[in-house]
Image: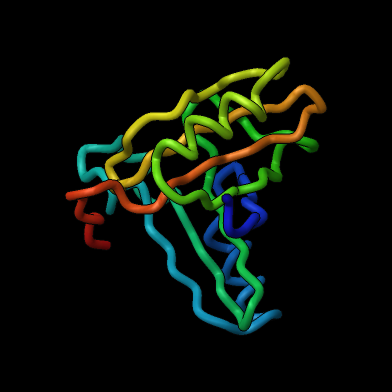
Amino acid sequence: MPREITPYLMFDGDCNAAMTFYQQVLGGDLQVSTYGQADPSSAAEDKDKVIHARLESGSTVIMASDSGKGHPVKDGDDVWLSLQCGPASEVDALYAKLGAGGQSPQPPQNTFWGTRFGMLVDKFGVQWMLNSDPLPGSQRPQG
């Protein structure tokens, strides 16, 4: 069964500033990875944008990123629920159940960070990200 649900915030280019602000307010450890760190061949205008940030302060965790190309952020679609699952098969099963009657912007797939990941909008308009434990034999990228 899933272990935790974490808020995942989407920003339109100011993720680093926002997460730094939240760290100043809440304290804790902030880890930030940019598109340029994840893919050195990314476009110059995207290199400094955040592909993933995680702020952990005690039992509080907030994750965030800048939205991808062609996906501008607007009020109402800037918060997702990130569901940490167990094995990859659990991502697929929960994706099918949560996605019934909803929309499927990113079906589950194996990722460069070594997990199975998918994104969906359920029939009530709630946005979900599902992420598995590391895949067998995967190695998480450095950075």
